[in-house]
Amino acid sequence: MNLLSAKNLSHTFEYELFSDISMDLDEKESIAIIGISGSGKSTLLHILSTLLTPDSGSVSLFAEDVSQMNKKRLAKIKRDSLGLVFQSHYLFKGFSALENLEVAAILSGQDIDNEILKRLNIYEAINQKVTELSGGQQQRVSIARVLTKQPRILFVDEPTGNLDKLTAHEVMEIFFEYIEKNSAGMVLVTHDEELAFKCKKVYRLENKKLVAVK
Ligand SMILES: Nc1ncnc2c1ncn2[C@@H]1O[C@H](COP(=O)(O)OP(=O)(O)OP(=O)(O)O)[C@@H](O)[C@H]1O
Image (cartoon, rainbow, N blue to C red; front, side):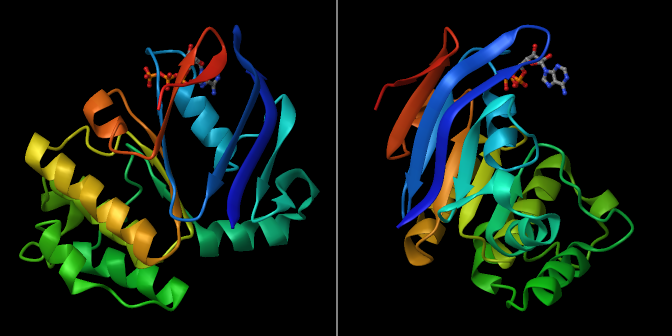
């Protein structure tokens, strides 16, 4: 089943970032987008995850055109089906790590998966306040929180920036197992080509186009 289909996307800020970009994400599929700094990778991810409206072109989620959805419908799809793992964590700072996960569990009606907490190595720190955790621990809590709501599509922007190499690879393994088990999909933006090439498909954003490199 097709989870996401982007057609002929173009976007310009101060300069034209890209034009006429199309891509498809199917169930159990992972796509990595690489490219030099400033090529527009994060902007493309923002468009695919509906945070930003493209200048032209369309994005469909689960075969529904995002531009044709009313606000309520789009909000529901975002809440139930999209998982964003971005550099800024958006954790509730005054709460503990566990409380942050509980909010996600309650809102989505899902359970917290202790196994994932152990693998992310945050099980022991789960009762600490977010502000007492290191940057890497906060990042791992935000990954656990996103997975707790069991989204169908993961949008991941440099998930391993604060993490050592071993932890970064473990996080990728957790993502891959997650999408396989849940028939979900993932779009990953990264500078790390080694991590990128673990994905099923790899595209490079260069000269304003998306070039398939795997
Ligand atoms: N909201 C915005 N308003 C104006 N310009 C923006 C905005 N967001 C991004 N840009 C510009 O668009 C260009 C591409 O940014 P983007 O973050 O998409 O690139 P990137 O490939 O992800 O870069 P990096 O690898 O450094 O994170 C940059 O020149 C950036 O300054």
